[in-house]
Image (cartoon, rainbow, N blue to C red; front, side, top):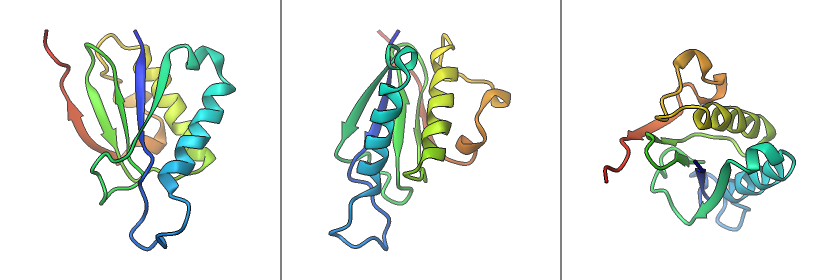
Length: 124
């Protein structure tokens, strides 16, 4: 079952100048490179840019979702390699679950305190 990582490509911090490259776009590019370098993970994860996740108070925001699994929105992600490592570790753990419920002890340190919302799966 495919996991989708939605990255808000328009995320920026309040003090960023409007003409600066948006951290959301930087995080998206870093995730594209990470998935290109990890074919096993890329086979399970679809990366999807979105113009806005409406989590502007918690940029950079991403959403992790999959059919028949819980979905999550995470905020305050940095646009750096550490965030990419955190996200790829979380995506691997999430993909290994049948329901999207990753046990707390399996959470990478970098996701702790970053969850904005959890949404139940759509029912058919």
